[in-house]
Length: 100
Image 1 (cartoon, rainbow, N blue to C red):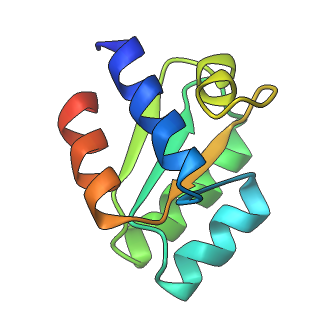
Image 2: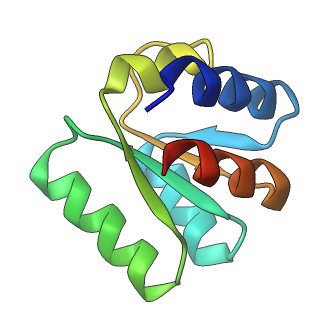
């Protein structure tokens, strides 16, 4: 995985205000149909991972796993983040190609 590429793109999406982070906010955006892509850190708790992946599956939102919470947090200029939702189709599509 080309970590610096997806991280800088996620940072750009964040500056464009097309990213929200945190479990509860992400779940809310998935339910509202606004989340286009969810990024989940590989070191998320089993409970959180299950909650997020189940919700993504039932609302048909793609969910990608990234290496760790520190990469995810630093990409959006914050502390460690376990869940990040991307709210823009363009950013989501490009991030998916980088994360595959």
